[in-house]
Amino acid sequence: MAKSQSKTVKKTRTKSKIERAPVEPLVLQPLRGMKDILPTDQPYWDQARRVTERLARDYGFSRIDIPLVEYANLFERSIGEGTDIVEKEMYAFTTKGNDKVVLRPEFTAGICRSYIQHGMSVLAKPVKLFSFGPLYRYDRPQEGRQREFYQADFESFGEIDPILDAQMIQIASRIVQSLGIKSVQIQVNSIGCPVCRKDYRALLVSYLESKKNKLCQDCKRRMYVNPLRVLDCKEDKCAQVAAAAPQSVDHLCDDCRNHFKTLLEYLDELDLPYIINPRLVRGLDYYTKTVFEIWSGSEDGRKSSLGGGGRYDKLIKTMGGEDTPAIGFALGIERLILEMKRVQAKPYKAPKPKVFLAQLGALAKKKSLRLFSEMERNGILVAESFGRGSLKSQLKVANRLGVEITLILGQKETLDGTVIVKNMSTGVQETVSTDKMVDLIKKKLKADNVVVYHS
Image 1 (cartoon, rainbow, N blue to C red):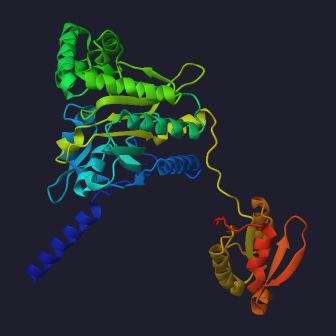
Image 2: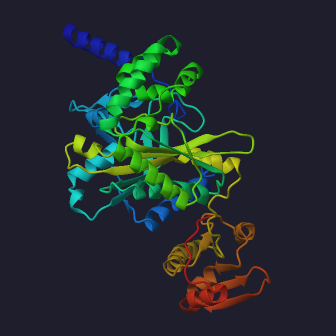
Image 3: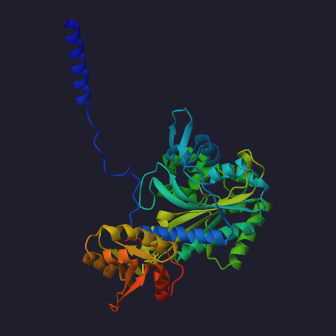
C-alpha cells in the first residue's frame, strides 16, 4: 500500500513539473532582417519578375533553380575565406547528419557547382543560365539590404570574348530601364588576371602599409588577406587612402589591357553611358578582368547601387571542372523596387475581370462551381464572391469591380439549365441556355484569351 502511494506521489510531482514548465511566448513577427511581401507590394514584384524573365528569354538564357542550402565549403573556397560574406555574413549551421551547410549567400557558386555536376560543359557555348530567388546574409539590416533578400541572376559560361561582357552589361541596363528607372550609370573596371594581379597586389600592399595608421581596423587586416577589398571600404578615412592608391588598370598585362579596351569599344558602340571607376573591385575572390556595377542616379545627386557582376574565368577550374571562362551579374530586387517607387515607375497591372458570377440558393451555389470552371477553361476572366448570401451584396461587388456582364444563377435557372446574362451598363437582362453561354459571352466581350481573376 505504501509503495502504491509513493508511485502516485511521484506521478503527481512529475505531472506538476510538466504543467509548470514555462511556455515560450509566440512572437508575431518575422526574424530581424526578414520581411513579408504583402499584397500591396506584389504588383512591383510581379513587374520585376516579368521583366527579368522576359529579357532572360529574349537574350537566350535558360532558367535554373538551385537549392537554398548548400555545403559550406562550396562558398568558403569559391568566394574566398578573406571576404566579408564568408567571415561575417553566412547563415551557417550543422545538420543532424553532421554536415556543415549554409543558406546560399549568392547564386554564382551554386550555379557553377550545378554546371560541373551535370556536365554542362558539353553543351553549345556560351551556356547561358538565369535564376531568380532569395539569398541570405547575416549582415546589418538596412533599407534595400535585408538578411533575406532576392536577386535576379544571369550567368554565361564558355566564352572569353569581351563581347559577352558588353552583352551582360547591356542586359543589366535594359532590365533597369525596362522597369521605368531611366537614369542609369554604368561603372566598369578591370582588376586583371592572376598573372598581372600578382605584381599589382604587391604594389598595393606596399602602398597600404605606408598608410596603415589611416586605415580602419578591418582594412588593417584586409590589406594582407584581401588587399583589393580596402579599395571598396565605405569608411571615409579608408576612402581617402583608396583615392590615391595605385590603379589596377595601370598595371594590366597585354591580354587584360586589350580585353578591357575592346569592352569599352563595344560599350561605345551600344551607346551605353559608363565611367571607369578604379576603386571598383567587387569583393569576391573569384573575379578576374572585367567588373561592373549598375547605379541609379537622380537630380539631387543621390545614387544607389542596384547590382553588378564581372568575369570569373578561373572559378570553374578551381572547383574541379574544365578550364571555362565565365561572366555573370545579379540585380537586387528590393533595391530595384525601392528605386521604382522613388521615380514613380508603374508596377504590373493585372487584367481586370469583365464577367461576374452571382448565385442565389444552395443548389445554385453548387452548380456555380461547375459554371465557373467551364468559364475558366475557356479563358474567360471571371470574378466571383462565393459565400456572400444575398444577391444584392453580390451585385455590389460586381459594381465595385466594374465588370461589363454579370451572370446570375438562381434556383429556377439551375433547374431549367439556364443562366441570366445582365449587361451592367444598360441593365438589360436575357436568359440563355448554359450550353450556349460561353459562346455568347465570348461574342459579347470580343475576347478569346484572358486569365481568371478571383475576388
